[in-house]
Image (tube, rainbow, N blue to C red; front, side, top):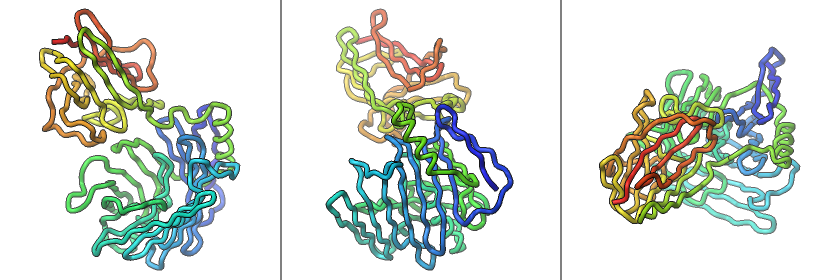
Length: 405
C-alpha cells in the first residue's frame, strides 16, 4: 500500500491510499487536533531495535529522533532521544540527547547538553509497575512506544496491566497507569489511573491488531483531544522541512498551546479577576455533544479556571461571597440548558472537579455570535447596575448577569 499526501494552506495532511508494494516492518502515523496536523511519525524495526522520528509542531517544528532497544521479552532496555530542528541544529532550550537505561529494579538516564552531561536515576520498589518508554512533543505522543506496550501485553497473554510511562529525561517514577485490551482489535489506556479501579474518565481509545500494532488512536475523552491514524507511508523528512518553512514564514501551527489569559474588571465597588487558558476550535464543532464531548467542562484549558471577587456578588438570585473560586460549565447533551458552576476548591488541575465543593450553579443564557471566535474567550463587563460574565467560542455566547451586593 502507498499513501499520496498533499498539504492544505494550514498544512493539514490529506492522504489517499492506493495499492503498492509492501513496506519494511515499521509504522507511519499522522496526529491531528481538529483540522491541524500536530505531528507525524515514522519508525522501522530491525530485530530488537526500533529507530524512528517523531516530528512535532508545538512551539516550532522539532524532529525527535529515537533509537529504542528491547530485551528478549519485548520490554525496553535502552532509549536514546535526540531532538533537533529539521536542518539538524540543536535546539537552544532543549537537551542535545538523552539516554535512558531500563532495568528490572531501576531506571537511569544521562542527559547531555552542549558541554555538560547530567546523570540521574531512581530505584524501583519491589512489585512496582513495569516501566515503558515514552517519547512526545507537547500533546503528540509516539505511537511506536505504545506499540511496545501493546505488543508486550499481547505476548504475555494477559488483557490488562499497570504500567508507568517514562521519558528519557525522567527524574522520578510517575504514578501507575492502566491498560486494558478489549478483544482482538481495541484497547483502553488510563493515564495516572492505578488498579484496582482503573476504569474512569479520560480513557485513551486505541485500535490495535492481534499482534499489538496500533491502527488508530483517539483522545476524544481526554484533555488532549488528538486523533492519530496509521498511514502506509509518508516522506517525513520533506514534511518536517515544509513545517519549518511555514514556521519561518509566519504560517506555523496557529496556537499550538492553549494560551494563558486573564481578565480584570471593576464593576461598581467590586474588583473581579479571571485567570484561564484559551483552547482553539481548530475546525471542531466544540459544542456538539457537550463542549468537546465533556459534560462538566473546566471553562477553558489546562489548570482550572479561577475567579476572584473582593465583594459579594448576587448571580441569578444566589450569593457568591467575596473570595476565590474555580469556574466550571455544565453542558447538557442537548446543548440547551447550560450552567456556570462556582466551586470552592481552588488551585487544582482542570480535570480534578469536585462536585461536593460546589457553591452555586447558575443558568447561562445562550445566544449566537455574528462572527465565529476561534480561541475561547471569557469577559467580564459592567452592564446596567451590575455586570455580566460572558463565555464565547465559535458562534455561541453564554452569559449571566450579576449585581454587586
